[in-house]
Image (tube, rainbow, N blue to C red; front, side, top):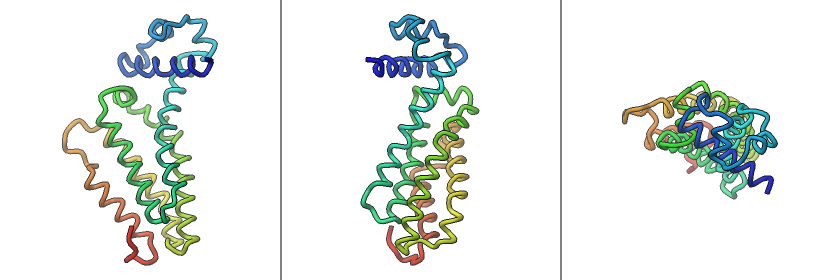
Length: 198
């Protein structure tokens, strides 16, 4: 019951933040929309900032779950790397196409992206590092390229996140075709035997 109430409050807050904006949403709004009293909300969260942090944390965990699936799969390292990169790019593309929830929160204030990027970034890098280590250990990845890749991927993902969330036209730089080409370029650049198939 406790977990359900907390999750309901997070979901209601997410919807209100998307609709009204974080600044324009009050604790009273969250209480009314969730059919809970303010006292109940304060049992779970000290203030609106804590609720907002819980919304961001939940969204970041949803993003990471897809990457963890790839990490724990039986795919060979090159396929894991390609699939994890592709999924990460697609997550942001899907987010940029949504007309609700977290995209709208970010669209209202792009500085909020930094919060989720920090939460997700370290964990993403851990997942990438494990895949790279697996590829180096298997003799599939060049060790020097594996050391360089995390920095490149971090910059590439941050740029993609920003461009996709900010873009309002159909001239988005990151399209499905460009994602495939970028992933192929990255994976081919790290392979010892470039003829290896990904």
